[in-house]
Amino acid sequence: MSSIDTQIAASTELIEPSVLKNGKTYYIESYGCQMNVSDSEIVASVLNKNGFSPIQEYEQADIIFLNTCSIREKAEQTVRNRIKQFNQLKKKKKGLMIGVLGCMAERLKTKLLEEEKLVDLVAGPDVYRDLPNMISEVEGGQKAVNVLLSRDETYADISPIRLSSNGVTAFVSIMRGCDNMCSFCVVPFTRGRERSRSTESILEEVKMLVADGFKEVTLLGQNVDSYRWSEDPKMKGLKLIENKYAPDVVNFSRLLEKVAQVHPQLRVRFSTSHPKDMTDDVLEIMVKYPNICNYIHLPLQSGSSSCLERMNRTYDRDWYLDRIEAIKRIIPNCAISADIIAGFCGETEEEHLDTLSMMEYVKYGTSYMYYYSERPGTLAAKRYVDDVPEETKKRRLQEIVDLQNKHSLERNQEQIGKRQIVLIEWTAKKSKEQLLGRTDSNKKVIVDKGNLNLGDYIEVEIVDCNSNTLFGNVIRKISSEEAIILS
Image (cartoon, rainbow, N blue to C red; front, side, top):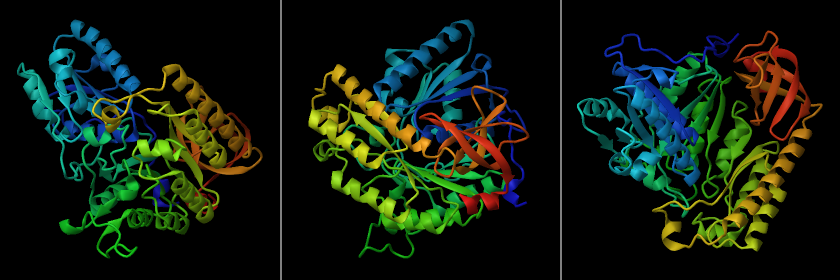
């Protein structure tokens, strides 16, 4: 048995610090993207090192943090409702502190403190090292706010604490911020400019995860394909030179290769890619290393070139199709998912049909689908009128959802009767007697628990499905080595 098959920590209990310096407890809720989940793990590391203790029940916490998302109005409203709920508890629990972290904190800044007066602390995504000082300010009777954005990677030297970890899978942040300025998106304003983390610090974190028994890592970034690192500051932002990268610049394909080489039985995923930056060399590295999963999340947003232009996506329909064709050519069995927005400013019925036709062509395994929600401060809010009626947005979104459900079901039905390799990750939500795992292509599979444990690789026969999930009968347990070979 290889080292990666050992030391699987199946517990979902939070890690307690070895010495409590102040006895204060904290609770964190994360909203939005995987980056926020990763950031919450950074927050936990900072707080634990300063004597705070994580707790799973918010009613018992001294400090409640909400790590927030501003990508859509609905996400912000969800957080606002949760803050109001926590304030009801605050009326009963003297000294309870409420803090808002992340993108919503940066976007709304002092509004949350001064106008609504529902929170005590507001911290942007780049200032989590300052949280202990901010907490002290609040304890001294002051409100605390710090939303400064950095031009450098802020947390490269911090080892995240895996909150509610399954001991099997982990996120590894490789970069922060975004330079793309899509007209609908607040990320460049809430997370700042793009900056990559040092290659060495990424590899060290991955090696530590392997030593701790983790079997899969997901490399995270707003746009992983634009990752670029060099020890020479002048070379960090270097782009293509005669279609080749300078030898001492690590681009994403080189980083992906280095991570895959850390351990041959470590499954490697990444998210999110940008169609304008995904090059064939990334696809070729995926083929070269069997432990890199055959799954790519490639946001579409719209199938219409004219709509993509208004979105400032910097690619058109033909460019996106070229990337799809490259994936199919180089990795024929690669699963693809997408993000899709319905009802963007000025979207015509013809442009909406272009999106549906793109979906019909690609037949994504899954998609993340939303109707457009104007975000204050974005380019779209400044340049365009949000002129698609809400009922039209909802109708178009429903058509997109219905088509995606149809494709997802068809993709899953193709797997019935076939054998798949599955890494067991969680207990199933509906029954403690069942477990949930994922295939190499990111399909969720439910199996009966039997004598299986989290972290086991199994070979299963798919016997049933719905549009979201496969159901399988366990054939046998297998080693990590065999699993990677067979996937």
